[in-house]
View 1 (spheres, rainbow, N blue to C red):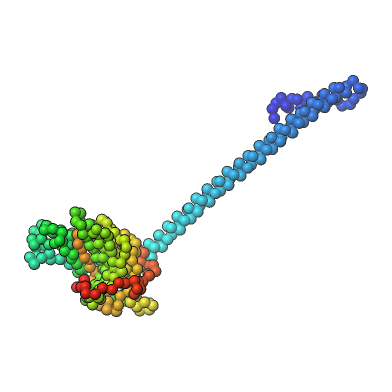
View 2: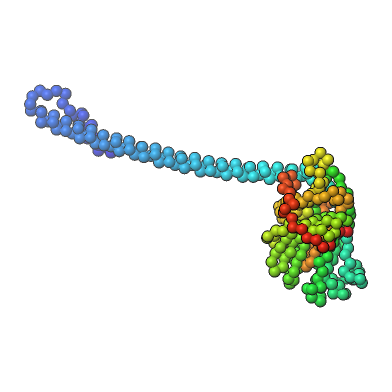
Length: 345
């Protein structure tokens, strides 16, 4: 309270008469009583104001505390979600490492792409090859050195025009036989040859009876299909509305041979792009029990590198979600085409 108010209250109380001897001091009593009542009123008003001010402070403090609590709760929830995402990433990583170590059979050391001959003159196999076919064919040129792993394939366009750029298939150097409970996977990173109108790319596996691949085309309109060739002529296709192909895209092909105790005994294939599974599972017939080869087919598209899984320490796969549920295509998902030849070796 103000100092002046304390002085007035002290005077009023200190000078208040103890007793009234006569009527002469009644006037004085009334003055003292009036001063005391006035001082009491001032005290009451002041205390009331202090009470309301304290209440307001408490309300403000409560609101601030509520806001702080809400903010802390929000931050904790965000931290929980971030931690959960981190746990899921760790689980995916360790599941993938376990699968790669104990189920995924890596390609043998020295695995490479087979050399492709551009024409009857075999000019692409000569040491002085300049990158241009003497007969003017456009074709994929396979890197011959096995020391510069991962391997690359450069598409050499025709010097006679785009109509002479051939869509050619390159096979891996080794075949593989079916092993129950095993799986294979490889990836390639692509580069689109600039200045060309038509671009096509296939990735998959084949043997003498069956070929299964993902085909992606970049032309006037992008298009992509999964193609399953059976006995070299019967084709089943699953078409996709929009799956563009861009520079530095990484495409992968996975094939699994289930264990003998699995409910599904048929091998299956699916495809990935930039570390994400982009297709369902394609079930293969028992004819795929024989040996098979990985392959790519190229037209105006080069392979920057190939990862056969031979050095996963320095060249890890971009795709790690091997342990996930697979939704398989049904018969009604396929369109049937006849009269086409297969990519088989």
